[in-house]
Image (tube, rainbow, N blue to C red; front, top):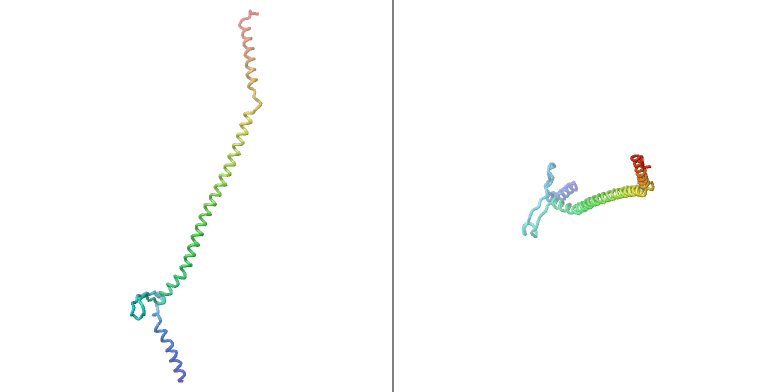
Amino acid sequence: MLNKITAIALVFFMLLPMVALADPPSTPELPPTPRIMGIQEGEAAPYSGVLLNSIAAAKIFAEKDFSQTQCDLRVEYEVAKELARVNLILETTRVSMESMEQKYTSLLQIKDTEIERLSDIASNTNDYSALWATGGVVVGIALTIAVMYAVQPGLE
């Protein structure tokens, strides 16, 4: 029986320091709030400084751990965004260049076809203008002689 009382007393004394040093329990509705308090030298501390409860210290350490991850994610996001913007500009420029190349090829083909057509017209060997001129002169002379004989019948 003495061993049971001693065991219970030891368990009680072992739990007493943890209860004495623990933060007050928080209500389930409200999350525990970080508390920061300034202290001066001589106030239950060997130096002046800032006293943090465990929640405030955990928050500071967690923010420190996550700040590098957050920075890496932000840099990765910005790099991906800039890469997408540059790829969009590059792709737009490439499509524009291909379109201009097709336009240039089409215009060159149309120009060559027109030059060939005009060259055929200019070098056409079926030019009858000299024959028409000669025929006109011959008909004119013939008409003149015919009119002359018709007007003066007695000249013969």
